[in-house]
Amino acid sequence: MIHVEGLTKYYDDFCAVDHIDLDIKGGEIVGLLGPNGAGKTTTLRMLTGYFQPSMGDIRVKEFSIHQDSLAIKRLIGYLPESAPLYKGMIVYDYLNHVASIRGLENGAKQRRLAELADMCGLREIMHKTIETLSKGLKQRVGLAHAMMSDPEILVLDEPTSGLDPNQIVEIREIIRRIGEHKTVILSTHILSEAEATCDRIIIINRGKIVADGSTQDLTAQQGREKQIQIGLLSASAEAVTAQIGAVPGIMRVEPMASQEDNLLRVNVICDAQTDARADLYAAIKATDWILVEMSRETQTLETIFRELTREN
Image (tube, rainbow, N blue to C red; front, side, top):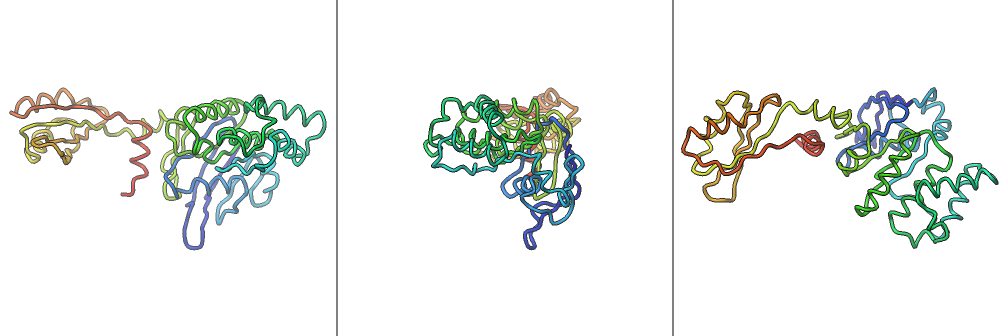
């Protein structure tokens, strides 16, 4: 459906997107994750034809962004982070105006407005002025705008930004329903939203793709290490590093600062295939240290995201 090759965007001397290669299949819901300034919005704007790439190509079906930009735009519905709505208009009048711009007439227009009112939950607010709506309802109106021409691809830039938890769940459900029939690409800062909504997650950092796959795939790919945190009384960092470092499967031992007197906290990194907790306990039991804490950090999308996007 979508083929991206060598996609690059410069702003003067700053490289915002750096030679991205990407393929998206029809019917996928793809989440684009990354810290602020990672290049997510710039990538989406190039995908929609809003920005021209500095280098590289985007192909949607048989169309190239360089020769067939208008044909690609006809296949895409786009909702930017702040929906560009005419706030003084009534919801029905606004969507009716959008339908006219998109070339819908008479019966076809009324059928589409009715479909979108049901799809986006707008039945109860069609008579209200847009400026009186909550941000969540405005996002629904913007989503209906983006869906007006029944595009094959829907691109959403931070669709739940600034919404409360209930509104996030509502928008998420709408996106899931749309994704049953269309290709959806969305950017988000909310990791739980990406896990709950997306079939596939792409993490971007400093303009480059650093991970690509389902949550399960990413966990398997990045889960080469496990972390076990322990807290010990009456122990020195040097002695703990030597004693625990000798346990089979332990890759390294990282003493951590503690604000509690006489308590040493240690982060133990071990091989992902090894459950070293029993051997750790045995090694500690052989000393006069007192074990007061032991917990294992499981690999989640959040820990993967932090690991892949941290500065160093």
